Image (cartoon, rainbow, N blue to C red; front, top):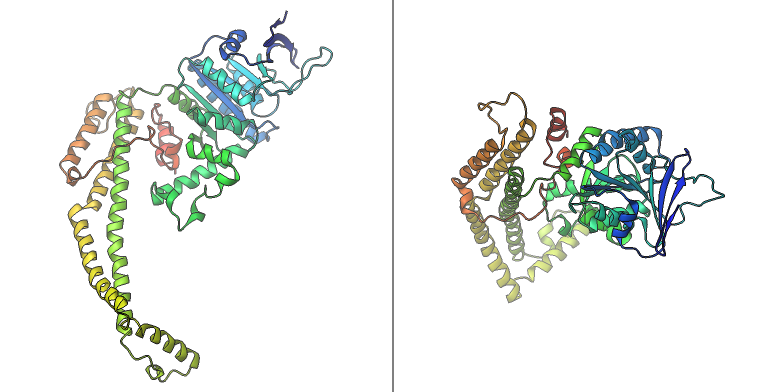
Length: 490
């Protein structure tokens, strides 16, 4: 018997393979707690939302996604007691999610959230268009599917930080975009599968362009006005503000083309089992981020102090030549022997314009003072560079940051490994990593770095990285193959 009220109707339906499934149709505004109660699904520790292409997928890509979603996504959901939420349709990504969940057994919790008008009933026949491996459906006639999916995830998870969205393909203006935007606005992580086409590949393309520019120019790339064409977001804010918001504000993690199902599983588990701020790994990443930030700051300062005197020297020489030429004769005889009459006239006009510099007292005074002050200023800047030693501080901090990172990865690879002995030269336990961090800090305090102001790091942990390391969650244990892909994969 269907359960009905003024706000919703719950009933059993028959899908195409003859199985019975339950569908909850929401007709009016309904509290999310009531929706959850009506679904009769036990509360979960985490929630994973999945969005992407709703059209049939090419066989090669489909086989890859089946492996990623079965051994990676669905297995991670089982191990972390996570609820899977998608659109529940027969075609596209939802079908692959259903196949992967079915391969893990009926204990996988899976709910499909359908767009309004997606299904119709006809004479009691089985409903078409629904994935046969989904046994729970929600049809909200009042709200967009993306918002309903997010509200269900919030109600399902015991920990609001244990919610993420997996994006595989998707249309720029479809539910995938809406779900990505809702994910970003709620501060959840967005896991994007590279090579799945559509929206996913567009996000990956922009993220890689931004990462390349940040790596070469630092964090000031958005304010580089002379080269707006280098900014991949220059026109995106006007042409597609929703995608601009996803790229600008999103906590995006990219699953590369070479990543396998086990790596995806570890990435998801790493997000859900994120260590507390008191953990040694969190402290190590924080210390690395601070060294990295201040190393970049000193590098930029060093380059400025080296380049500015060079520019001043060129300008000073040019001004001296111009001022000297202003005292020369401006008659054509100064260019005797030149057969080209046009060149003689051009030269004469130019020299005549320069001859007026000394005739104007303000210009004459300005040139004199500028010619005198530029070399003095260059000398002062070079003295500052010699005194402050930003180049030395940059190299020391860069080396310290990389040493901390090396300790982090060795700890993650060697932790809990049989055969660890105290004579290992790299950290393999919490005590070793802590001692490694303390040693590096002590070396920095005994160097020129102790004279510099330290800028605190306030970004995400772990910080956004580049290359193969950008695919790493920063905390999950690593096997040898994954370590090689992350650390030297690029």
